[in-house]
Structure formats: C-alpha cells, structure tokens
Amino acid sequence: MNQLALGGAERQAADVALALARRGHTCVFFTFYGKLLLAEELEAGGVDVVPLEAGRHYWRGVRDLARRLRHDRFDVLNSHMSLAGAFARVAAVAARVPSVSVEQLPGDSERLHVRVVTDVTLNAAAAIVCISHEVRRRLYRGTNWYLLRRPPVHVIHNTVDVAAVRARVGDRAGVRKTVGVDADAVVVSNVGRFHPQKNQLRLVRAFATIAEAEPRARLVLVGWGRLEDEIRQEARRLGLGDRVVLAVERRDAPAIVAASDVFVFPSLFEGLGVALLEAMAVGTPVVASSIAPITEVVRDGREALLVDPRNEPMLASATLRILRDPALAASLTEAARDRVEQEFSLDRSADAYERVFRQVAAR
Image (tube, rainbow, N blue to C red; front, side, top):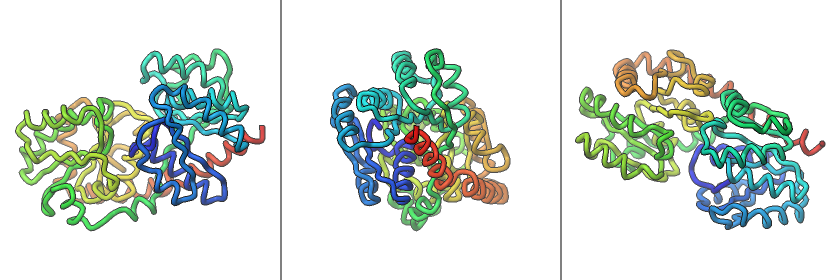
C-alpha cells in the first residue's frame, strides 16, 4: 500500500487484514511512504504496520520489503494500488514469495507510465483480484498484461464491516456540532478525496440550486486532497459562504454521513466505492452516479437514485426529491441496508480473500 490515509482503498485493505487476523492468520501491513492514520487501529487488532520509508521513489523500498519477506518466510504478499503494487510485486519476485494483486481502479483510467509499469508487473502476480466486474472488464480492455501470461483473475467486491461502521455513529446533533452545522439544518454530505475523479466541484454547483430551494441546506464535504482550495473558492464564487463545510481528514466520516439527510456520491469513475457502502450501512438515503460499477451495488429507484454525474441539474433535482419525500427516503434506506448486509458484508470478502490466499500459497 502507498500509505495508510483515510481513503476507501486503505479502509478496505485494513478491514480485510483485521478480519483475517481475527481468524488466526498473521498479517503485516507494509507502506511505502506517507500517512499512517490507520496504524493504531490495525496494531490494536493484531496487525503489525511496517513503514518502509521509501518516499514516492518506490524502488527505495523494494530491497527492504524483499528482505523482510524472505526473513519472515511469508506465504503470500497482497499488493494494493497501482505503483505501490507494481514495486511490491517486484519485491515478491526477488523474495520468491507469490503475490496477489488487488486492482482498485479501471485499468484505462491510469496515466500512461503507470499503466505500462502495471502491465509488465501484473504478469508476476500469482493471482489478480478486481474489486468489481467493471474493473475486470476495463483491465482486460485497457492493459496488455494478457499478451505475456494470464494470472487467474477473481472478482471480490469491496465490502464494509457493517457492525463496526454502525458503532462509529454518534449523537446526531453532537456530530453536526463538531462540523459547525446546526441541529435543524438540512445536511447533504459527500465523502472522498478532493480530486477531479470525485467530482465535488460539480456537486458544489448543484448545491447552489439546492440551497436556493432549501434555505436550511448545508453541504458537508469530508475528505482531503489537492482540490481543497479550488472547492472553497468555487463555494465563495457562488455566494454559498459557510453553507459549504469542508471537514478535512476526519476519522468519523460514517458518523457525519449518518447525521446527514442525503449522501451524494457523484464520482466520474470508481473501482467500487467504500464510502457508498458505508452510507448504505448507516441508513442515509443516497444519490449516486449512474456509472458502472456503482450499478453493481445499487439499483435506480430501489437502493438509490442514480443520475448522470456530469449533469448538475439532475444532481440537484434528485437530491431535492429525496429531501421532499420522506416515504421515498425511508424506502431507499431500508432497501440499501438490506442489500449491504446481504451482499457487501466484510465476512463475504474475507472468506473470498482467504480462499484465494490459500490457493496461491498451496501452489
């Protein structure tokens, strides 16, 4: 993994590691650089965290990672993220340890040099896990790894630890107070990196329409990233002032979403979307992009309202529709809760990862 920030990929990898540790497996989490915000939680759950301190020049960590893999006689290396995964696979080859590569994003969404490195090193993996059918489809379409060798490919959806997420939910008024929002406000929330992929700028523009129709409306954006200043500037340009709140690097994102009236997930592309699953788990009605693989998770009019993420009026209209129709909001919430419990629970993915790791280790 690159680092242990608060993103969905990091959250998913940490949850699976913790689930496997509870089943008696020895798990060690290696990071190449950066933040270690989930380290305390992992270590409390019996998962060691080892920062390689390689910086963004990943190759500096390859030798140390390979040495550790050989010394501790690991059975499998599970790699995540594009460049970190590529260099981790190189270390696994050097240490003669089989690797399982988890592909998080559609292959053709990466920059060219990342795709080239991924193409070459994916062939060193003993198996590949795609977090959605859409990622698998675009991996085949967008890379050339299959020209050399074809490792087995498995689809294991991202999931969520439903009980743990719900345990993080706090007092609604108290949580709102921590982000500077009144108890009686109408709150629209979003969770994700402040990045063009997550489409928060369009969401802010759509919120201008929502705010005009609903004077009590507030938009709370939970995340971090390079577009933070641009989002703040856009809110000021639209005259929204303190009606748009940026909650930066909050560990209590599920609690903030649970204290919201609508969760909006307008990503332009996704691997799957852990924040979406968390919103479903805590019982907040959802407006989301009508893109694959979100359509693998929710169905329009049943678990969520799905819209074109580039259409700001549609984003605003769907959000207002939920806010104005309590019966619709309740119906979406109930169906979403049932679906995440039945189809996207952590136990399902932990079972699947355990099977793949056992197969790879046996070979």
